[in-house]
Amino acid sequence: MKVYFYIFSIFFALLFSCNSNKTVQNETESKTILTSDTVRIANDEIEYEVVVIDPGFTSWFNGHAKPKGFYNQSYLEARNIFWVTEWNRRVLLPMQYDPNLYTMLINYESGIDYGYEVNYMIYNYLVYFQLTNNQKLGGFSPRL
Image 1 (tube, rainbow, N blue to C red):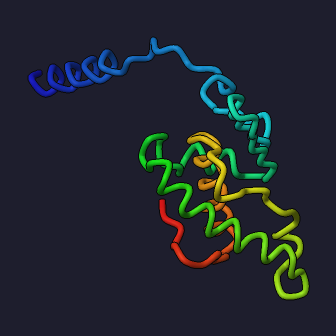
Image 2 (tube, rainbow, N blue to C red):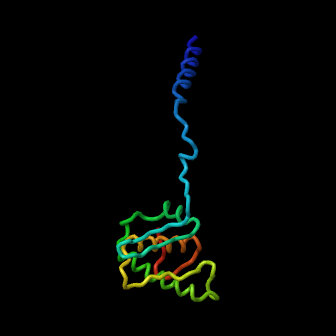
């Protein structure tokens, strides 16, 4: 009789311990849906903007980029100047570098203060580009 009592008790304990009254989230609510792989960052005060049209960058950026403020502006500018110069050199040498990777020049000059937002986005795109395409723009290693 004690054995039946223990089995009966365990059965009811398991039955009532399972919380089946939880509401099930709609599948569309729980997923983050990316509507576009185009990212636009603008510095309206000095009228500069960055438009990134690259499939996969938005999801990479959301998952891997360091938060704003992690790097200071001078750190970002130092890397951007070096990497953009190398990028532009590779755009101008399509016989030596893949023209499908380096499609257009980046208009970035060292004497202009583009602001933190623009520098932050350019830096993260160039890190993304180097890591996903196995390219080294030289000088500084891209790091996460």
